[in-house]
Amino acid sequence: MAGRISAANARRRDMAKILFVQGYQSVDEIAEKLFVEDGQTDSARAKAKRRGRDLVGRWIKEGGWEELRTSLAVTRDSNLKNLYQQISTITNNIAQRDPSERVATPEEADMLAKLADIISKLEKEIGISEIVNTGMQFIDWIKAHDMGAAKEVCGYWDEFLKFKMCS
Image (cartoon, rainbow, N blue to C red; front, side, top):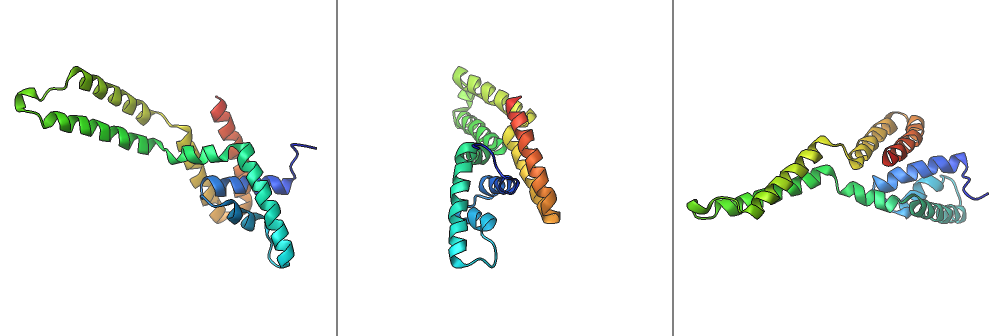
């Protein structure tokens, strides 16, 4: 039946998502870690890796993991840094003028006000990427202590993210 996934593959999918989105690992690396077992013959290893690559590739497409990985690269902190740099550039341009002309033009004043407003909003809000980053760090910490618990938390974390994105 389409859409059904075994419990073992559900756990693999959750771990693959973490490895792909946060760890920036390739599909081959993930397939090797999650589908190839010690003691397999070369032929069995190759077959398991091929099957793993196909599954992980499908999960990436179906789950939109590529977009999630990209969105995590643009964090709130990097946006804030960029906005502060823009303010700095405008104020430096004003400071380089003759002393009698060191006043913001109406356009500059408008831009400074808009940038300050955006910064204020960003500093108060917690974006989905920040939530994801924190969750991934938490799951990494749990993995170091209890892999079984980490797998369980991954399932709950995925549901929580879906809830946050829909609310």
